Image (cartoon, rainbow, N blue to C red; front, side, top):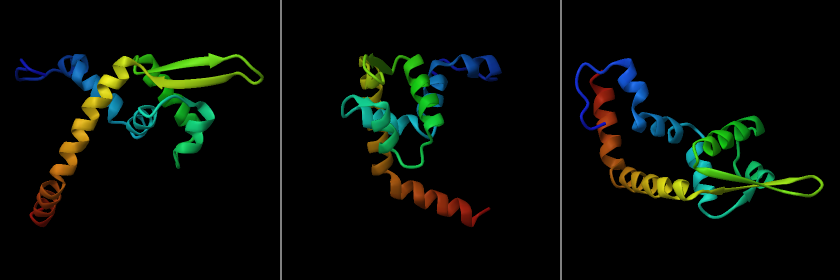
Length: 124
């Protein structure tokens, strides 16, 4: 993001590494799954039972995206039926640290954000 000049082109926006990461962690379910996996490995069914409102289809899509980005690893254990276990990678743990910092910032500034939204709503 540093060194950005105006006008910002579509290619600038799409090619920005920070934008790609924000898209990943800004979706509905990735932060939740990253938080759970920060506690340790989970089987697919454990994750499925652990997040209310998350469909199996969306769980699969989100886990695949996190795995594709190198944030989550998937280990298949032999058996009948086979069992998949998901865990944070080192890269995922380093991102989790940054998300924790963002969460602390949000809690610290919650009242200011709420007040700004209220002022904005009163003037629009």
